[in-house]
Structure formats: structure tokens, C-alpha cells
Image 1 (cartoon, each protein chain N blue to C red):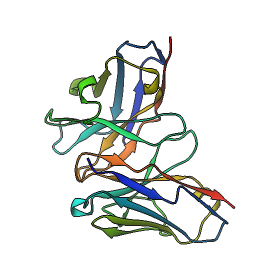
Image 2: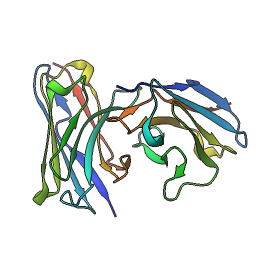
Image 3: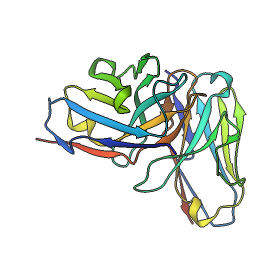
Length: 107
Length: 119
């Protein structure tokens, strides 16, 4: 089973700042089968990024994904008030596993 | 427009079997490449994938829960059913069903249903 480790656990930032979230896999994720989801309290997760770097339909271009192999990054270029949430990475190259999440909170 | 909705009991007793139904619209589970998965989230904790069924009835299960899970589909009713045996309080969680895109990620999710395990 591929284990995903996200860091940091919590990111305290102000609106307008840049957020950089990390996701590290215990073994290489084949074909960059890595997705990112955003989850707000009381809501289902929302797909942001798939294939490590492709934005899902309707996702603003301030969200970008990068990486390959075992190291992946989600970057939010300028935080908007609605971006404060929990973010999960997920691999789908070998069954499906999620990271433990990174909470982006208002500083 | 793809939508999914979970239904089932909100409270189950320890050792009982949980049966959850995912009713969906906007796609057919008889279309090649399509799948529906189940994911759960204990209160305040991370997401955990449980099971998935493909259009061709191929099934995948989480290795850690495989012995307790069964996933089935009823294509005519647009439903997927998940059963989990021997429920324990640690299984208290919000259970989501989700549409599997052809490329393998979950692109549409249901609203989730909270299941509490308590005597």
C-alpha cells in the first residue's frame, strides 16, 4: 500500500499570500496518478487537480500542482478567503490512498 | 449532470452489519470505464478509501478492511450498495460515495451520510 504523508499539518497564512503544500509518497506513484482535493467543514471533498498538474473543470488558475515520482506539491498563488480549508492528496496508481490532510487557516 | 446520494441507517449497534446505498444519476454503470467508490471520514480525521466497483463488475477493496466489505451494483436502479460487517465504534464516520472518472480519480462526490456505531 502506498502511504502519502502531507506537510505541514497546518499552514497559517493571510489572504493574498502564497501557500505551498507538500505530499510525499512511500513509493513512486505511477504515471503521476496524483490528485488534490479541497474540503470545507460539513462539505464533501472537491477535486482540484488530477494527473499531478491538471486542473479540474472550473478550478481557478491560482491553484497549480507539480511533481512526479514520490514528491508532489500543491501551490495556491494568492490565497482568497474561500481557499481556507483542508487539502488532501490522493494517489490512484495502486488502488486509492489519501494523505492525512493539510489545514490552511487564516493567520 | 452527475449526482450521487448516500442513504442508510444513521445509527448501528456494535457487531451489526451496515448496509449503505449510493443512488446516482447522470451516468450509467454499464458504460465502459465507469466506476463508483466508497470513502469514509471519521469525525475530524482524514479520508479513507474503502471499496470500488467498475462497470464490468470488477471490484477492489481496501486491504485492511477487505474481510468486512462487500460492494455490489444494480445497474437498472442506478445504485451501488456497500455492506460492512461486524461494526465497531471506531467505524463511526461520514460515508461518501463518489464517481470514478475514466482516468481513475474521484471527480463527483455525494454529500455523505454520518453513521454512528453505538450501543
